[in-house]
Length: 509
Image (cartoon, rainbow, N blue to C red):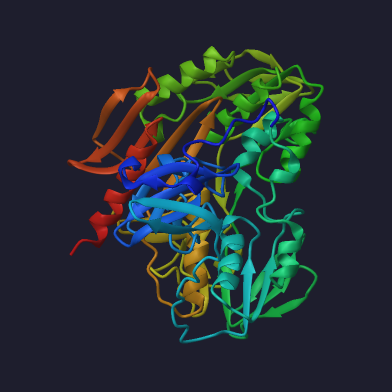
């Protein structure tokens, strides 16, 4: 064992453990050097690997719900019986072990083949499915189609230069230099060949022939479909000021964007981040890890007040200032000339690198030109169907009837895009599953994670449990006494429980 490795946690399960050793339905132990989680539910006792297949979150700190367990970090959900990843952001299954009971003791000695999850009957099996978009929703849909046993053609068009990647990490560890590039692909290149998914990169779809059921690429190539998923995502809002097109000015959306920023950052001493959004501040934190002087320019009084409220906004401001970030509040950038940024207030900032994080806008042109019904996004029903038969939409472009907020909403969150892609895939196979997942996102600032469940476009009260400054809190965003969303810092289990309450509130008779 090297010095960097820690011994596996808990008792050796090959020697047997008593049920009295379980805490809150769970017991963390090991078989050899593999950490195993024993979980007791009404259906029996299950043994699965102890860490989430997404970011290696500790499932022993998660929430058991029926025959499933939810990860405390990013709310992935796994079936305990089969090991299958039931809800994104995880897509890879957990390994599982055989459980044996001898008298009063439980033994785990060997791995077992996972039980195959029963699949819904497919009343219609299309021959050709086309997916437009190579982001979270598009990837999740393609992966789920194959997982559901779909044997027809899947063609996935992406205007990106890279196969689907873990986009949230672009503004976090990868930009900071602590995550290698081989961590970034959602699946290795071999996955698409092995799963017979025809992934066509650097390919723009310019029109949809809804009557002929085919899409047309920029070079005139046509691809027929029986079912079509639009997952075109969003694109960064661009600056329109003088100097916005300079080579040291960048947005952050793709792997290519991030590689370009990293290349400049290698020799940069100062950077200006325009916008105090999640992307902007995560990028600021990542670049501070590279010992770059950071200036953030934002028109607001405090960062992210419109999403998290003033108290959390003040805390995030102070957190970044503690790490050396300089803020220029209630100000904007008027022009960029060479390595100098001119502020509307009259000040000037030196900048080897400028990152623009002033928001994104959904890519709607393709859907608009195809005649789909629009409402500040592509309008879909509870099954993620658009107004045109056989066409579905998911991800950043989709506006759906959210049963939790009781509004028609569109959000730009990675996890919701993946879960919509998964639901759309099943519905393209005729399963008729309503999309009722609770919105969830996470943000990372240095060593501090912020989890957010639900959706609160507005609120009239924020109930604060714990202490924000002590980094131990849960905030409830309420409207007329009803909690619409919850944000938390280091209260992972409470965040999972809030998500579960929201789910049950909409399914209760």
